[in-house]
Image 1 (tube, one colour):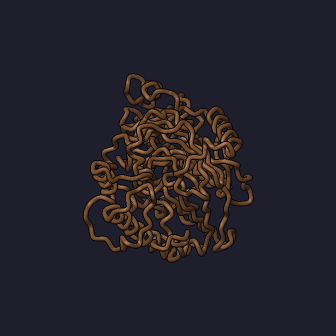
Image 2 (cartoon, rainbow, N blue to C red):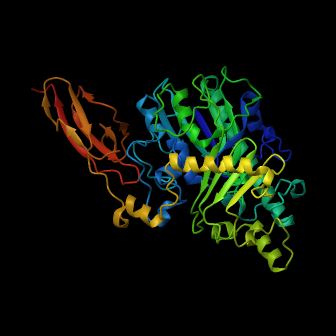
Image 3 (cartoon, one colour):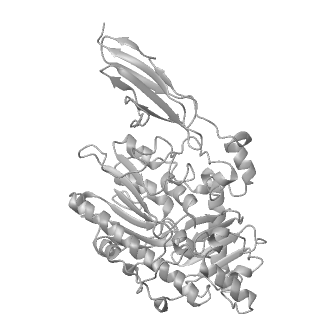
Length: 508
């Protein structure tokens, strides 16, 4: 199984109808697979979105909903029963690996992922045993927001761009979009190399491939927001012999569905605590009526927003309507598009709806018909003819808020103290090894345990500072002597120091 994830991208794909996109490899993947046009992230920014992807739980349910929680002094510590789906795959015999980004709120961006999550946290499927099934997650960074900065030459014709009406239509804005399309073309070439490699290694016919972005394109009012520009993205699934090539599946899919679906495709039982649905294969669940998304603190900007989406309509609840749209986010303000918004406002030339950044407050509720109003500009919440729909979607949000255990109303200072008391990251205590070493006449079964609720365990018989850590799932049979080392990992805490025990077999 291979997930190819674009960092910050929307529907800039030829196969989804974009005439400007240069995406021959994604178009090929779509011809050989299925397009899902109604797929939605659970957040409009990367790490909360990725937290849902890797756990099958809403970030709001496990305390991972504030972007870059570590900048506020903590990593979230999910409830003890919450594991990444890659751990379940490892326990079932899969080789799991990640390339490009490890940012699921549980670690730094590129390193220090929990020890038990991956066989190779910075690699692909090369290290697996012959014939071993694999899951590889590849993040391609070419489309990230940061790649819009600078002055590198542009290939896409800015005149060909259709500028959404919530941006001013100027040359500089068009150049930002043109650069984004160039970055998508660069990403597409890397997708092609991955697909070619599957072909060359004889794996294409038996590997399920998913392509999708972690959130919407890295432009203002798209990334970080729960408008469709931030959460609505292209999903392509290729499953040779099981899905009809070139077809379209209109069902609603949420990113919280990806973890249970990956487990189901691997034949691994889906833990009942997971909040998503299986959307592929013989065990697929019925399509939901609604999908849900959330926005909370993004860098220094604080605004709790919740979204409910069906195939056509979008409901938004602004819990802090007094917060302005234009809260300061320095990283975003480096974009030429933002500079144009500032300039035109200062000159008195910024016209609606591109003046959204300077609106001082938000409505408490928003309702949009995304079929007739794809840019979500005309709020229908006050229209009498839409009151029944408004009430139904409001009720769906309120049920979800309770049933999912949304932590958005909990002050972040309180979350930090809950997860890291006193602002100090807890360290997982070393596990116990039983028996604790010694000489044995015959092979011996060794048990590893931790008294920390929710801790996962890993062990190695390798020497040195960079061993391969195996996931512990049950007693380890030692039929030769050596030193067994073990570590415990509690998500959000620091991994434990080593526990070790030395064994001699058959020496007496």
